[in-house]
Length: 632
Image (tube, rainbow, N blue to C red):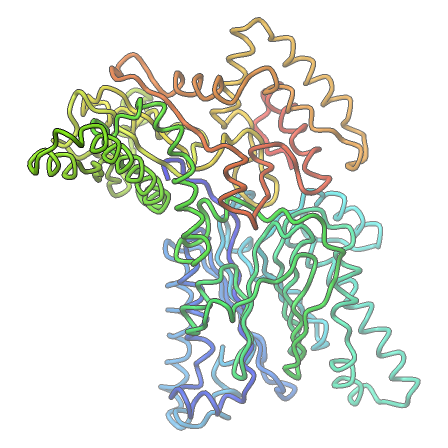
């Protein structure tokens, strides 16, 4: 992908269902859970490289023995850093106490991280400081085992200030306004409340404080706590939590915006952000890994009893389509086919732009994630070439000899590896002109395979800002002197900000938005900008449910093709000699290719939660006022 866009996070939960001795006997180690968590996090490193965190809970520990361990890192390679520290601690304890080596009971008592319940998190920092304090899991500590809460999530709330103010109204003093802290304190408030109520009942039943503790663990209704805590949440989330005594949960938002998958057998219960991660790490079949339904939570009690419970009424399913286009690993069986289909569906439009001249066209892709959609595009191009060959054979059937037939059949589609991404080039020079020249060399090209009479068709996952395309890729491709460069995006035009965890928050960053603004100015319709601004400002004090997305009016005067043509102009400067055209996926074709993930708000402005319209209007107000802040 030419424009790297960050998105929030991947989660992993592992609950070992057997005693640690079982794993020692079967797999040769009591550190089975730790080893599997390392693999789960490493296999999801595509979801976050700014930070990583790990937490574990040991079940049934005696008072005075540590039962919660946590490790977080923002090192250059945070996952490796965490597990290097974990291994170092474990090895140090085993070195100092050789008698622990084959005694699982002693390992559990004295060696850190050897727990039955594990939580992992990988993070992209889309907002706020990337300090170790902002890395999940977050820990809410308490001397009562049941009130210890560990939270990690792949989420973003649009109404974090409203949630924060509600906590303040309850008399709390949260240490910051970050949505993770706010969400954790919200769950924590209702957890405290539930524990207090259960204890009150137990006291009436004659239980002492000491006797009450295991009873509280048994009677805690996690679903009820989550229902109360998440009632006012507006956002996309897959939220994982562990309680000190050993209960765990993963809760998914009612629109299914953020992904969550789970797997259970007689040894483990596992939850992750992506299906193939579970398949690979636990050698599970595709059909055995289930998707957690929107608005539902997987709840794992300390006893190991697992249930899926409805927490919030599911809304219309709007799972994030960017997961399928770009974020998730392409090794998922469904995602692989969907990405190929995205490439295939673009072919009719590509053929128009190259006048059906497949013979004089070279097909390629922007490395690396666009490779799968490239295969789909090539399959469709091959089908077109076969059709052309069949038509030529039929037309010349009376005159064709063996040599002529072989000449037609030998025509091949020309696919080449044209764009090559070099290792990251670091820029130390501050002058813009010098820096741009260095940026231009981030990508290199393969010489000698493109002729001056050729069309060069190159596919990318999506075009967000267009900066790398303009400053590097198109400049490099133009050195090959093709007749025409056709840039193809497997995603539609990105027109609106995301507010559910993808780092696309400012309208002015989007090349599609800049193109629409330029067109308004060029066609004498500039007054629409002020009209939309006034409408947005007029709604500032509205309740979220009443807010309308007026930013759509910026795009309404123009067709998709007119905006694409303007984008092509913006991507080209006077140094580029070949003609440049840009093709975007149609939203309708995106839905055909990815029928389960219909969340398309960044393309259409149709937000799945009421907070989205407030965010997009605020983003437009910020743009007009020259405010570079994020809109939520």
